[in-house]
Each structure stands twice: as C-alpha cells, then as structure tokens.
Amino acid sequence: MTSGTATRRHRDRQEVLTQLRREQAGRDRRRRAARVTIGSLAVLAVVALVTMALLSARPQQSAEVRPAPDFTLSASDGSSVTLSDLRGGPVLLYFNEGAGCDACIVQMAAIEAEPGFAEADITVLPIVMNTAEQINTERERLGATSAFLLDDGAVSAEYGTLGTGMHEGLPGHGFVLIDAAGQQVWSGDYPSMWIDADELLDIALDTL
Image 1 (cartoon, rainbow, N blue to C red):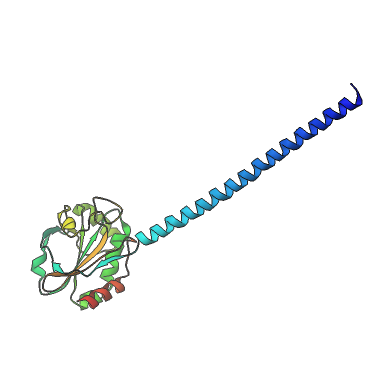
Image 2: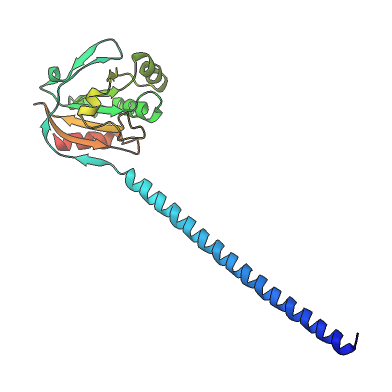
C-alpha cells in the first residue's frame, strides 16, 4: 500500500468520523430540544390541571327563590323530621357525602360550635345517604352531636345536590337556606368540601 493510498483512506475515515459526529451532535440537539418541549408541555399541563382544579373547587351559589320541596326523613337518632313542621323559623339543609368523608362530619361539628346559628334560630339539618349505624359511627368518632337525616337519594335529587361532589350517586357538599315562610332563598355548593362556619352564618344572615 502506497503512502498516498494510506493517506486517502485515513482522510476518508476522518471524513466519515466527522460526519458521524455531526449526525450524533444533531441527534443530541434534537433530543435536548424534544426534552425541553416535553418538559414545557408537562409544565403547561400541570398548570392547566391546577387551574381547572381551582376553578372546579370554586363555590357555586344561587339566589334563586322557589318553594322548598317538602319532605319527611328518618333521623339517625330514631326520630323523624318533616320540613314543613319547621315553618316559622329559617332552616339550613346541609347535604353531604356522610360516612367516609371526614371533612363532611367535621363541617357539621364546626357548625355546631358556632353559637350564632342557635342565636339566629336557624335550624341546621345535615342530610346523608347512609344508614343510621354508618353515620352514627362516624359522627361519634369526629365529635358531631346532631342527628343526621337519612335520605335514599330522593330528597338530594329534588334539591339538585346529587353528583355535585366526587361521587355521581351522592350529594356533594352543599347547603340550601329556607326562610321562615318555606321559600328556598339561597343555595351553595362547595367542591372544596369546606366553608368556615362563621362565613356560612354571615351568608345566611345576609340572605334572610
């Protein structure tokens, strides 16, 4: 092999190596760009999900006035309650997921601890789709003393509260305010599963 031939082969190998390095560098740049793009899209997706979650967790309130549908429900203490028997004083219905939702029970305990409801003669009725045994176990564990009304879904559906929370067949975390004349004057749904008791009281007093 002549020195010229060897030189050409060496040069050819170097050119091939140089081309391979360029191609590899190009692939590396494209991979980095793809990672940046994917990372940016992931960040945007997270931001979008957080935004949607915040928007979906916003309270939904209505001041529509209508006659409150009457009902009679058994309570977890063995008694029964008929809504129309409570005419002459305001009533706040509290529809919630009940057993399995600690925040729902703690919410009722917080309402009980706010003396303003009793001072304003507002009767608060928590309504769940549980058995007495189910809700009593949770109520006692979490310190709520009120009897809970036991619904088969009919009352929750009539008040438009089914499927407003995390479960399609259960009420969400909603309130319906009924005035002394039996008119529904306000409703509020709280997907965040909480409203401060003093804020809820202020809403009721401002509405009545």
